[in-house]
Length: 495
Image (cartoon, rainbow, N blue to C red; front, side):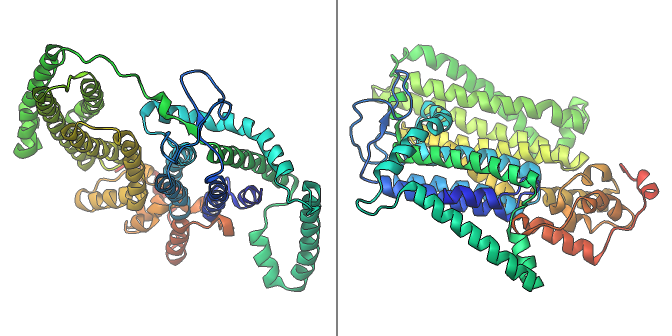
């Protein structure tokens, strides 16, 4: 309850900032307390192939954490830390699109914190459990309030609510008196307290219900972790050696031919390829990148299916699996490098954008996946791979946040302008406040034209909307304000 009140009070919906981090820490502390209370007192709840509600299966036997897919202590701490780190991006970066991606990822890592799951199917089912758990948690919470009252204490739930109400009245009364007595104290309190206008109160209540419901469902899942191990796919009959060997040999041969061509591109230079194929930079990069991205994803699927169906009974079978799948993974790394090179050529010719940076990050992550797949092929074990796939995706997203993407995009485009004299001022003006320090390197009037829209949408933040990126931008703009007029900027929309 306390964590829900804190989250509803500090969360800012218009401009993310410090409040999101405070809310995430409060929620993590609340669920961590529930996990400590649960330890050694309850058993995982079975989630088998039969349709059952979370926590309703009968006959669940006690098991150590992690034995049934429920997160063990180390995994729980790791996923919880990842969730807090993802939410913390809103405190340090002003890019709204980046924070939206991080919040979506935080929902996934938060679910894994509460439910665990090792197999892909187990993780997918885990994602559906929190809404149902919130509904199931309501009677569970009522029973807990009734049964967990200390014997002979005489303290009931109603008296607790009365005590909280009296505390709120006293704090409000004396807070108003102190605020009227001292202007500095009034400003401090005004920055910390939420909006008490009717619209603000309604918004606060909605946030309280949503956050409280989510935390209640989370506490239920932490206290009664589901058994997701029963959702592993059943073992299938191994294929005949010829059934999977022939397609993979032919696919390896096709990849080898393509890789030889790509080595010409990587070592011979794009100019040679463009002259040979008669293409422009845009046609060369755009015409191949998305296809290579699709090839990369499909190759991972092919390797997953082949690794599952290939026979491994004899030493010869295991050697064949390692050679064919290992070769495919190694050749795929060259294809990943080719796709990245094409995007680099395109960005050098036409400038960096958010989309180009994100897809390059995705391609780097896919390259890392092929390395992990290669390790799994050599070991002929991949039970650890699904969790590591999600973990590396989270690390890739956090790495992108550390790079400060909007500032990196602005830096590359400003450097390109200083070298070539070409600049898309209209696109740069749509970046977030993170880009302000880099855009300030532009000469006037381009500097003011690129920063004008950003400066107009950079109001002062309250305490819980504090954001490092916006604070840095304000310091830069306070030192050197924008000065160009609308007329001057019309002719500079794209250079």
